[in-house]
Length: 427
Ligand code: S3P
Image (tube, rainbow, N blue to C red; front, side, top):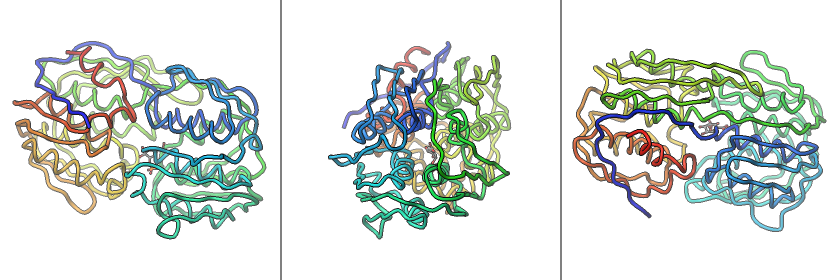
């Protein structure tokens, strides 16, 4: 476990290229692996989570070349996947676990899926139950709710499933299984979750029907290989958007950031709080929108964040909490109980660690309440193995009066291995 000390800075100025989107990078590798032909990926995120996806699909018999942010996947169609002789280790990655289970549900062989201590605590019944209903045989701890999980796929039938949670991982797992199931598979969700699967499946030649909160696929579909250009990850950009807004004398431009509407809750929140944020150079590549984002030091107001916006910013709540400590007035975050089943229980970790740094913050059942502005005073905090907690604490350190010491900092490599280099470039 290594530590990092972050100190207050006088300004952040410059331009950085945010690394590739994690959700899109995972999907590019997985869809390339089940597609017919050679898929090339540009702008891939070489973070540990996406490398876990590559490693699992190699074990499933797919040749994959990776050099930094360039990946080539030699897909052989659905039947090109073969039984792995080893356990499939997903590391810290929930997306690898849940989407891969959807793919394995229709493969006529046995697989064992395992991950790290954090994955072992995350609920998997949200995918194993619907996949069982479709006909996959899945067993694991807690009646199939926790890893290690064993899955034997095969002949599956389409289902109509109403998900109790707005989760792109659940939606994607069921749709992927549906592509090789008999009949039609329909997923309905309570609010719209990120739609990268739908967009990328279309780019790979799949036909799907979308109607509001419902998505359907007809079984028996093959994917055709593609060239995928991955935009920068708005969830990674979020740390610098907040840093630029709260550090004095700052102006930061982030280039080629993905601005898919199902992900831009952070932009809506920043604008509503009064941030000086501008979008330029908007374009669309591979069905995904991207833009350059420029943020300047801003005078901020507390707001309420609840309802349908929550799935559009769920991964950004740790850094939004840091933002709220520097805003005038109270920020209330509601309807976010999903935070409890992320890489850590993020209601607990955000509230406890920000309190240590002097924030006026309290946990609620489904979120948190933050009273600002409060001067942060520095102190010793930890990531608890959660990349986004580690990065949120580092940004808090940039505005704290005394230094912030962060334990277990290597967790950041999961999604943003060059995070501290980028801070350094802006100081
Ligand atoms: C992801 C979906 C979200 C998100 C996660 C990535 C994806 O999780 O929090 O970081 O790539 O599909 P849920 O589907 O559990 O909401």
